[in-house]
Image (cartoon, rainbow, N blue to C red):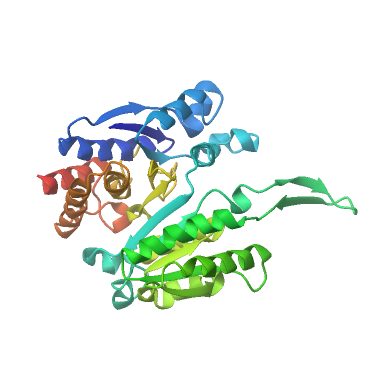
Length: 348
């Protein structure tokens, strides 16, 4: 089983190092690693955020454990050379279309949420986000209007097959959980969303055991704050999912706690924490590695067929938190390495 390690930029190398320590401690036979350059680190080394060698490694690997990309030094580069193009390029080249972002409150962290404790404690949801379409991959550019004004444009589009694939993912996830799927769109004003809703309803006929509801994205954002416990699985498009999943992370207490998986048809996946590269704290030992460690657990479950080992990691994280492990984002003072040590001690 080959894991491609892509640390990337900012705090990426620090958090990947802790996840690898935890994986090594499991003693899984046949687990091997190869490291590749991505993001700003790759651009500075070889002139491109996703070098051919990195993409070749990604395709060979059984799974990818990804740190983060983003470097202020690269902000003035042409868009196709910016660090963020590494993750978009991997999604497109490998057909990584289904992003799974669980959000569940650890009891010990309910007080860390900006929500009331009784509201936050009810959060246990999964956001299923389509990641190969929408405005991120549509036609885009800059032009001049008839009046000579600069105008930027990004075209939002989905075809029915893209929607059908992610709808199946959402229904299957809901079937494995509590049997409720909420499809989030903006069908009252967007033709793209009207197609989305129509296709989701068509697919629902194949899942009579799953209760389907629909919600406009602005209302969904409000409901995640007002009554997040009502949600089981949310399925939505690329842009809406990007925004709602980050919102959900703060509802559970810290963006440093949320893992994610992005899968293709073969369940080959890219696993990453949903936070960014945090260049303001890079190299200071302040980064919370738990989201990356939990991403490694998702990797074991979805791509490497090691569900028992995934359970071990998740239980160790819960035990470490119950024992008082807290990085600065959780109101504590423990370093990145100390948080890794706490998980390893709980694992033992």
